[in-house]
Length: 335
Image (cartoon, rainbow, N blue to C red; front, side, top):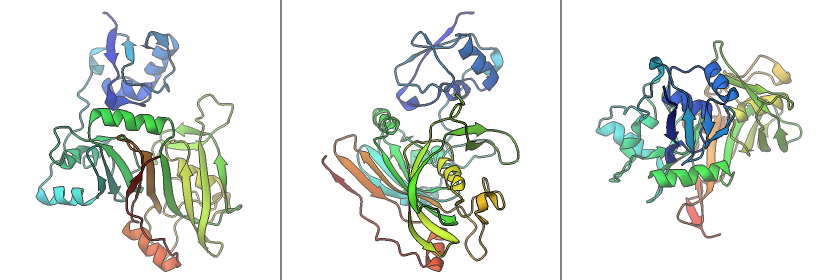
């Protein structure tokens, strides 16, 4: 059988090679992908590559013949059935919209994409955000299921490619708010801690601190500062990730002895002397919110959009006496 030839599309900008292969050939295992890369059977633009290589639209992939149980599948997200009320609820999430982009304030607990046992997710509902456009909107980045806040969506394939490039070059400034158990010392600083993925177990795939000498450990940096605190037990942090690793903020906060409130996936009792990430009298949900996005607008200039806190974090802020600044209206300016 002859090798397969594929071209990376605009919608696949910045995706890792191994994820691209698993998406198009679900029968492939990670071990098989690693072997294909190690032996040069998978090539990008004729060159050997590693499984973690980030792909760019227009690149040509050479893939060895794949057995029948790993044939390509239609990657279009399966639409989630929506009635008029569901469509109205979805459109009520929109906090900014123009001809090129949409920004929604994603609620806590709404998955961004589908997965095992996940049939209700934002990606499947994007037809409800066409607003008369012939193009189906496309996700540009992701938020964890339990993280709320500003999520960027492109209205055309070309705009999706431009925005993906902005994330790839770190031209997008992301600001998160979190309530953490413990008060970081120092109260502001930079966390430069590589992360490595670990899988399996009841908590599923996770990230963990990695060794800088480990080639599989991904560079990860987060800037943080304390905006307020309730004694030494709880604090309100502003977090700005300079890289975009899986669960980066959650692992980095835990690493400085301040686990994010409600983080059941990563918290371990008394780890780092941080106390409990579950506090009696406060809502049990994860207290991590994507507060703002500042990005180069595809049509020119810079756009800033802020997202209001979810109900459970508003309640915690009220109980803890944290006074939030007024929500700034979305605005765009020339640079």
